[in-house]
Image 1 (tube, rainbow, N blue to C red):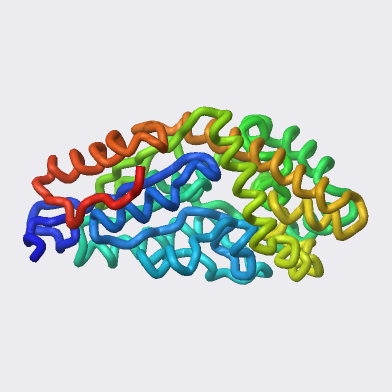
Image 2: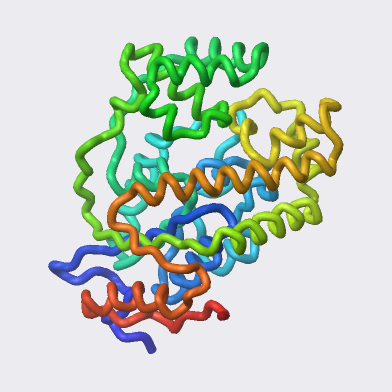
Length: 327
């Protein structure tokens, strides 16, 4: 029987809970490691992914599979309709509230995701940002009529600092940044906190990385697996809603171009691979700028396990269970 001093048990007086956060580029193996760590700690997982939150997009967003979600309960996956808006600020509020409740009776939790702003929101906090639905509607109409280029150019003029750091091919992000600029009269980047919110939990953040060539191979294999799993049909079902912000993302835009007669299915698949590689590079650029990340090769089982184990031993907690991830 597990000891009362294991990571799976409730906090004792004077202890602070521990949030183990796993970050890194797409296809690096974050979900597999998050599950392995959560099993060893005896806890549940918060998903910090701005695409996996949406319903009806399990293949194209690489949501945790039903088997993975059965093995360890995942929160903030597959719960928002594609028609709805869900911001990083909303995620911060919901995730911090969940953690507050969870840590009433548990010592540890795991957060995993590749959406840097979502991760930052939970770990450091975000300023409340203004919103104007009328401005957003107007910007979406401009996107529909004229495409992303003019919107990106306007954002570069209004907030060059943020424009240099973000994905200017992501309509949802461009429109949200422009909306803030236009309705506040201030750059979007001015709302990003310089100070860090004090949370009532400690954080251990592990960044997963690997050789670029190995990551490219994994990305290509993942896209091929998505094709085998039926991403074309998933995208076809969503095509009538192609104008929605939630669907202005890699893995769907390319299929919509195909359905509209602008490219062949093979060309769509190749474009997804190229755009996913570009996206992974942008993710790494974001995370490498974050502080207090302990980086490890995603294949380095010993280093990752020891990093988690040492954080727990420092608190005099025993692991709930052995690590089960295969080499």
